[in-house]
Length: 227
Image 1 (cartoon, rainbow, N blue to C red):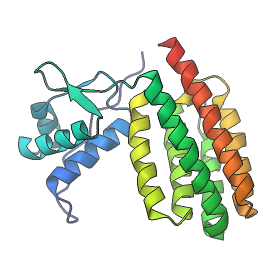
Image 2: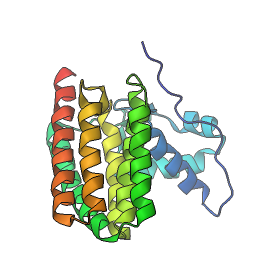
Image 3: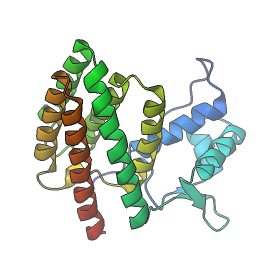
Image 4: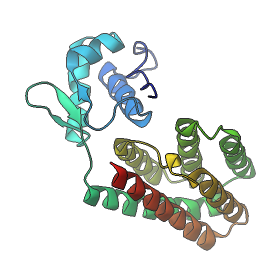
């Protein structure tokens, strides 16, 4: 059985002008994205505080923010547990993701600089070179790819909304790159999106990006059927 990644690593850095509660919150969100915490996992103040080497006060603040956003819920007086999204929430999540990714690709086709297009090619090349067994690394590079498109879209509100959506996607569990054939088909879809952005074809970039997310949903539903 594959080992689960460590829950969160190391202590929280106190520099950079970031409040401690905010730093703990970001650390927990990153742990969700990395798959260190999954649906049904329990979060206890004391354990998180010990792991991050902070007091329980900023941990309590961070857990409260996670609860307010709906990422965790009470666990019968024994801390909080990471929520498990039901099928209707999954469908709603992907419907919104399709709209946002399509908009980002359209805007990127208008605003992306040549170096940004080159960076997309570089990320995709790293994706292709990733061993087939390393689905987690593929998922990380895939996030980088979509984040790069959002940055190239030059819209801070879209970028912020996309980042929040990624936190929700983290609750879904195993990456769709564990579905047979998905890494290869995703690569082809990514390549086509890059080409449309480079050609400044916003209509095509949006259409391809939306189709890409619909295919990701199809694979997600396959995974859910196996659970």
